[in-house]
Length: 90
Image (cartoon, rainbow, N blue to C red; front, side, top):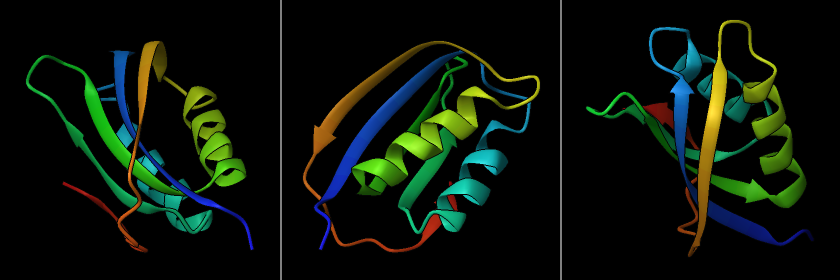
């Protein structure tokens, strides 16, 4: 069985008003990743995602290759897994 990781991400750039959260939710569900995503008041987007390392990398690739989305900076931090299986937009 693959190890499950949970990461907290903060995305900066052109990430609000471009379908970022919907793309994150769609791809997280497709990849069996649990967690959430939300817009922040400073124009960034915050996300927690829990899944295998390969699935988390695939999610980041899908976001980075999204139309209209431009990620200038992504800050990632490892956090303890919670066992969350669903993904939602907050």
